[in-house]
Image (cartoon, rainbow, N blue to C red; front, side, top):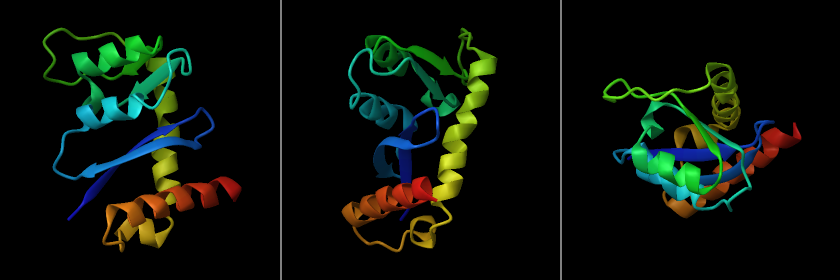
Length: 131
C-alpha cells in the first residue's frame, strides 16, 4: 500500500493545504481537488510539475484568477508556455517534502488509517515550520 501526498505550499515553503490519494491514482484530479480549497484571488500563481499539466487543471487555475506555471508534459501536442524563472521556485515544494520526510513516521507510513497518516503529515509540517 502506498499513498501520495498532494501539497500546496506558500512562497516560504509552509504547508497551506494537503490531500492524500492512493498511489496508483493520477495526480491531475487530486491536484484539482486541492485547488478547490482556495478562493478566487487568494493565490496568484500555481507551480506544478508535468504530472499536473492538463487542460482541466489549467481551467481550474484560471477559475481561481491565478496564473499557471506548469511544465508541459512531453506528450502534449501543443506545448504550453511557462515562466521558467518562476518555475524554479517549485523547489520550495520539493524542499517541503524533504523536510517532512525527516520524520520517520511520515517517510515510512507506519499508520494504518489514512486519517492518522494525514494527522502525522500535518504534525510533521508543523514541527519543521517551528524548527
